[in-house]
Image (cartoon, rainbow, N blue to C red; front, side):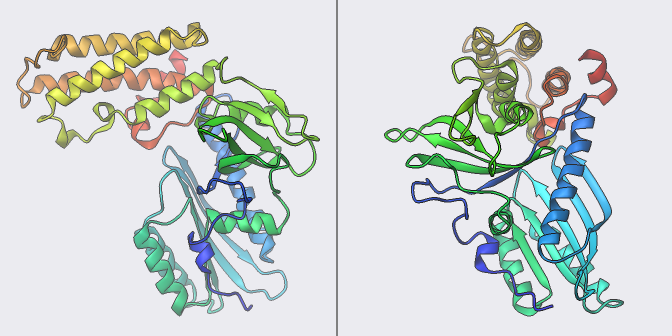
Length: 393
């Protein structure tokens, strides 16, 4: 039907269409925000929101309502396979969509293109859409260029390409608050509609001051502001509705951080603590590093507990985590600037690490379920059985 190859813009080689003259350049995000009574319900809602979002995107290319072949939502992200037919030409299309927190690999792209080629054995005109959010790895981009140079029936869409399509459709608009420095743009996909957000930066220090969110015309619904305020993307900033006639309606405060925002920051911090997430094969020669990491975690948990807005419910989880840190140090040693007293290759260190991870997994599961937060893949890997999480929440 005359579809062109994916341009350089489609593989993240040009700035986002959201970037105004005063923008500090950064890659846009696409966040799927959903409500639910449990973490499972939230994941299910996110999956179906993403499915409808992709359907609207394909409709903008002229395709009829797509048919879902596979939908999978996990801690790693969202995977969606669909088929569609062009409403004018009848040309069939298949689409594979990957929405992860990390770049999509070249292997996944290669698997999709093999599927596309196989589909053409029975339907030669089949077009293929590969939606990779936020983007492909560098190796994946090279492979996409090679495929697109030989296959005119292939279209790649990364976050940049999706944002451009949303701009062309007038689904999203530029920030109505002008003459400010902003960064970290994001498109928010919710059951209430699609909205746009960004961080406003201090003109001198360029540090984030608040989070701006806006729609095409109407004020941003309160549930959207609340969902955003609970997202790690918020980073504890005040959430401000920059639309609605620039009334700057605010939810939350950087100084009065809600428990949900505090829980989000805790998850962001713990995601980078390798003592909780490092592979089993790397543990036994790193006893001093494990001890140092646990000491830092315990200190950070104490600091969060001392914050006035932590709240009683979250404090219970933090204290349980801190107690787990104490048990680990009592078993392994290494506190008070001494060296660990266990043999790094014995089973003692391994058992202490397993106990530590299990304790943190239980508390993180409770926190994620209570505040309806997504856990990064590494932290989700230490969660216990889901039934035990719900029993404790």
